[in-house]
Length: 180
Image 1 (tube, rainbow, N blue to C red):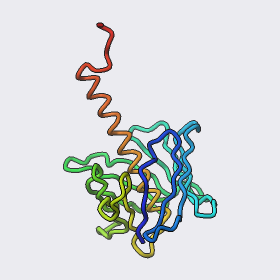
Image 2: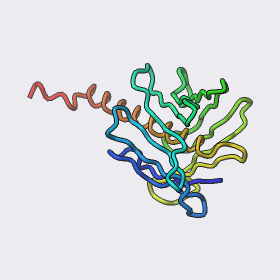
Image 3: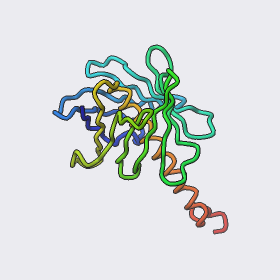
C-alpha cells in the first residue's frame, strides 16, 4: 500500500493527514509542539492513538523512539559510521534491526530487514504534489510502524541539516555580530 505524507512536520505545530493511494484519509499525525520534548501522535482515521513518536532528549546522536501501548517498539537513529551515504538504524523491541539507505535529501530511500529484504520504500516520485512524499509498505508489514519510521527519519535528517547549516554559517562569520 502507498501513502501520501505531507512535509508539515517541521512547522511549529505539526498536524496533518496521511492519505492512502486512493485519497482516503487513513492516519492523522498530531504534533505536540508545546510538550517538553518533541512528540508526535499517529492516530487512525477515527482518532484512536496507534503510535507515539518522541525525540529522546539526552543522547549522543539524534534519536527518536516509537511507542505503542506496550512501550518502546522501535528506536531510530543515524548509523554511527556511514562513509559513503547516509544510513539510519532502526532497532526493534524484538532485538531485530531495520536499516534505511538511500538519498534522504530527495526522499528516495528503502527500509530493509535482515538479508536485504525490502519492507518499505519512500519516494517523492510517485506523487507530483509539492511538499509531499510517498511511503510504500510491503504486504505483511505494520503500516503505522513504517510510516512512523519515515516520519522519524525525515525529522532527524532535517534537524541535522539545520544544525549543519547553522554551524556552517557561524564558521563563515554569519550570526557573529559582536565586532560591529
